Amino acid sequence: MDMFPQSAPQETEDRLIREAMAEAAEGAPPLPDLVPVALAMGRRRRIRARAAIGGGMVGVVALGVFGATLPSWGTGAGSGDGTAQVGAPSPVPSPSYATPSPVRTAPTPGFPEPIPSYTGPTRTPAHVEPTPGESSMADLPAPERGRQEKFQQQAAAVLDELLPAAFGTVRPVDLTVSRYQGGSGGHVFPVVFSVRPTAGPSDSPQKPCPYDPEKEKKYRCEQVTLLDGIVARAVTTTDSSKGRKHVVGVDISFVYRDSTVVLSADGDDSAAVSAPVTADQLLHVARDDRFLRLVRYAEAFPMEPKQESVHEG
Image (cartoon, one colour):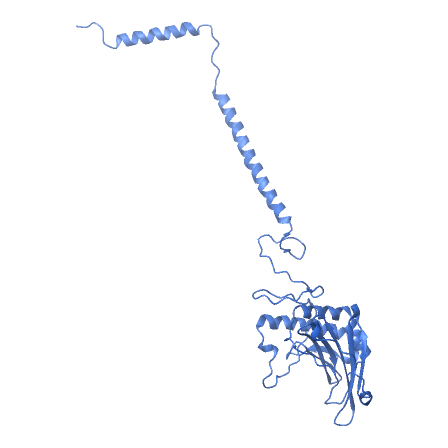
């Protein structure tokens, strides 16, 4: 029978190892406590991580503020105060009527046309029923009708400022974009402001005034020069009413680019009252830059059907 259990040799071996290690470490300094060091390193790592996150957030905010203040150079879009609208769709450029495009541009489906700017009070249009077979503005598509109505409001305001006070308040007529009327003392004075495209400059020459001694009393014509060397014809016509009273009307016509421009003011035929405006006063209207701005807009963005030929007397 064995006197020692099997575990005795293992225990003896472990004891001898411990004694050898103790003798080897005798005289060495005690080991440092690693727990405080580990805690300090953990705190430093957390601080660095938080600083990195904070710096990243500041960078994102700064980038957002910087981007919000950048103008949208490519589209020209922005709010009224000059600050770009971040995230908003870019509006279609719409030049004001003061600077219309000098190039004839066909309307683009789905895009609004630039229109003259007008912020004054709305003038109630005068209603005229179309004759059988005649079309009116009511037959136009809604976007085009709105564009022409806004143009009429601007044109009526300009004519109201430039025509003599005796002409009364000028209002648009809802039949067609070229029709307006003044009113004073119960009388109605028809006005036409037409900018109609023609086939081309060579097809619409400005003919000299005809000379006919027999018509001199009822038809007086003179050629004058407007701004930029434009030659215009000013015609004063005198008609006899039913009561043999003379009713005087005046019209100015000239060619601008590829369009024929007509501005006329007639008297009240039913009351046998002449138009309260002279040829010189109507020429003053035609020379005014506000009126010519309207002409340039209407020539660049036509609102009347093309006139294939121009017949002048």
